[in-house]
Length: 196
Image (cartoon, rainbow, N blue to C red; front, side, top):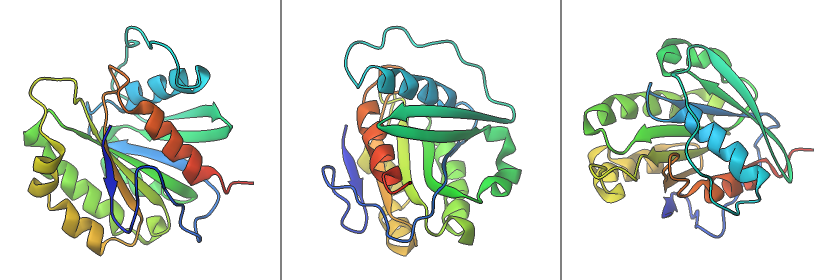
């Protein structure tokens, strides 16, 4: 997994903003990007301490509504996954958000601009100003996926990061194959470490 980000975030040295409040993690993204599979796989990775083969991916269906899932690794982290079809009311769930996982489909260039618009809306929200953000480019296991640099260029991610109030990190993952999920779990642990 390649991790990059703004504001001096490094792969080995993820930092949590000092003003972050206690709360949960929101998992957002368009319909079909792999959010439900990500949560199920993170549960598997956390229960195995990141070791061993994950096996075949579990079956999933598009989320209509919201799912709350606890990931237990060093401490309990609650992830609230909101269905992509709920985009118009996502803001109702921003309160008490400590971290944000925003997922994009790296294999679908036609969806990239709509996802970028959603991301800009999230980053401009005052309620999310102190949340740490991890942008996940999923489905890198598919032969038609776009390279991270190409996606960053198309959505002008360096400009977005430079203007955002939040600390932003990016990662390429495959929820299906398990690629990069141990690093996502480590990011969540580091981000939520300050929880009492």
